[in-house]
Image (tube, rainbow, N blue to C red; front, side, top):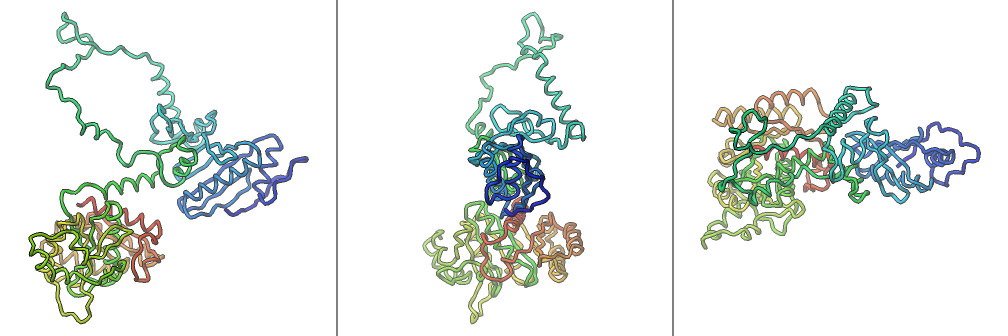
Length: 513
């Protein structure tokens, strides 16, 4: 946390000197405390890890690696100020979802701030109707007011809702409806509902019904970011709901993890080299593998030599799809192929929980991988992998390329935001539609990769419009320097923004499976 000192009020006479090294913020805090009032402490933290801590107009800049780290730094700093002051200090913390009112103690613990006067100012108070945190608290509001009551439509709506809720609580509760008496036919004219008949055939709840009432994965308190940090700091006493970014990620994870009724094949294509086919194949497989716990294969279906093996972690062997094809007769001679038999041909990516089947890497080899070769391997591999992500070559007329298209459950058309790779992708779509694959194109997903940190926005908009009219969805992924060198792709070395983008891509792809 770095300090930016603006104009600060003069220290009142007789005020104790600020402790050495605490800076202008600490000095102001001590001066205000000595003057008999509580300092006004506000902070803001952002998703990129930056923010500000302001104490009576004196600002400290916050620079951290993430929103969670920024929140922890702000909390720790306020705790230091509280320790210097000798008592807990109230603070208002703003993030992307609104304003949160907290009471931070000298030992770093965090409690709810007093509620008096806060709801009318649109401040989110832990445990209030805007942010329930304890059993019996009200349901979360769909929107929260900002600013003072009556200053905006949101505040007016909030006040109206509060009045309505109060009136509803004060209204008398009607007695429960009873079954009609024998002298009242069906209870007509009584205004009372007839109780449902009790029958031996009435369906009773089962275990499946009980399991169906569990909250979905997107529910539950925050685990990430500022909210997750404060939940941990309070020991769970305050358990705020996750913010929009975390809720979105949870929904995307649930989409990737959805149950499949059989193995699925995803084919990644663009007939031009350098279009990020291999990168997309690796990152799709990594995301599926991490979220589904394995059983994912990235397969280089190049008729001669591809680069998927080069972009993967090295194994203790160099065998490829051609070697597996040649070994099939001996592997099937005993009547069955086991998953362990494949270990000597695939290259396990241990940290991402997927396997890689490389294409032929022998420079002296004259072997060609054709449609029959692809079909034989696909039949075997589909027995052991739930998701197969197939990297295609650059020759659309190759029989193995066409065989992959024929078995694809989902096409992923990739391009960088460049004229040449985009034209190649558009030409591939035209060719697919001309050869009877219209429906596969309509269900396809287009991924546009930024080739550099600076993107041609006009070209990106043109490409989004063109491919958006042809395919189910168009998704952008950012440039990441970690992918530029061309060596093995380390998923954990990618920028969090890149990992989030590929989680989104994978969730969109999964929706088509």
